[in-house]
Image (tube, rainbow, N blue to C red):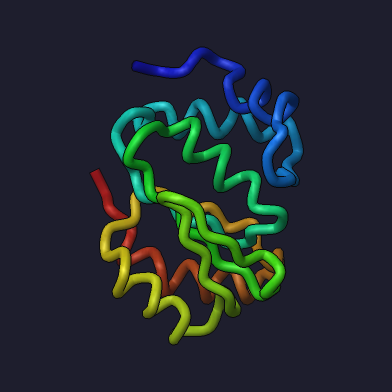
Length: 135
């Protein structure tokens, strides 16, 4: 069952959970590209956890059985909930990426909202892309 267009924006506006830091114009883009994963129990990796609310949002959007993985350099971002797992470390640290891949060998979606430094994003892409599940 697909979610109605605008679900993510509405979730953001009505959020009473952990903080979500997003530009609101991203929500329609996310829904356009991610709708096929709704109710498919995807594994999603988000680089850059911030307040952690986006991981909760993804879990609600994609539905039961979704695994949400986060990575962030800030220890204060660490928390754990059912189907949410956060790794503390640098997005370009091969050892941290290996820990994630070892625990979650199949990743369906990767969102890089981490350091925003070009070289970090390039290095992260190079390490993670081979592990991204392709349909």
